[in-house]
Amino acid sequence: MGSQFAVSTALSGRDFATFPDYPAEIRAPAGTTFGVSAYQINLGGEPITTAGDAPDVLVAFNPAALKVSLPMLQPGALIVLNNDSFTPRNLTKAGYDDDPRDDNTLDQFQVVMADIGHLNLEAVRSFGLSKSESGRCKNFWTLGLLLWMFGRQLEPIEAWIRRRLAGKPTMRDANIAALHAGHAFGETAELSASLPQLSVQTARMTPGEYRSVTGAEALALGIAASGELADRSVLFCSYPITPSSPLLHRLTRLQELSVGTFQAEDEIAAICAAIGAS
Image 1 (tube, rainbow, N blue to C red):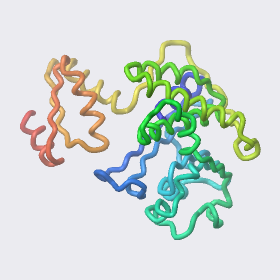
Image 2 (image 1 turned 90 degrees about the horizontal axis):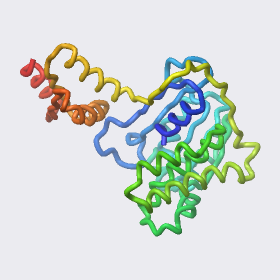
Image 3 (image 1 turned 90 degrees about the vertical axis):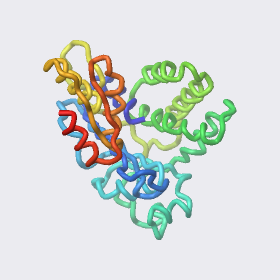
């Protein structure tokens, strides 16, 4: 969801920087603060050099995400809550004694509560998906809502879904339906006072061809280029955990450039292997 919102931001003519934040814990229990993943994007009409500090908009899919992210927000920030995930069990797993929706925890923020899970299931019900397959579509439902909030076009994201899921027509069509349903919710829900459309100034972009690239992709290309420039084979030794896993994945696709990868059992083994190969 975050990467496609970033693509939408680029296509709309805004500069941006992103910060994907994934838990370091292996198989952290779902619904706990240790297992929260996040994707932060800072965008604007001026050159953006960092992913930002205090978000203006937070989308919290569950109580744990709210618990972890709330201290980062400035008063007045907009919070979109997945209302139907705030069950007693999930609140307990996140470490809440009381429901933050009912006390004064959120008083200083703009809060929009949407039954994202339920609305998404309704949007994809006709496709005959399993419960888990239907649940995975909620990211695109939420992305559709964000695209409405920021005045973005659906067509580029819809085209990406069609390409990405070309071999899975049912999932392709279900995700597109979820995307449109989230966008329609922004248009039709009676939330005009609490769910504003946000306007961001367009950046001055030099005409030319632009590419979307992540830090891992750029670093992988840099590692491969270093071997080409030095006329040497390159071996990347790593223990597969954030943030090295994306690098391993990218570099394994560059073997034709004399790039090798070695997956070690721990960080010390990776260091020793790199020393031995040097």
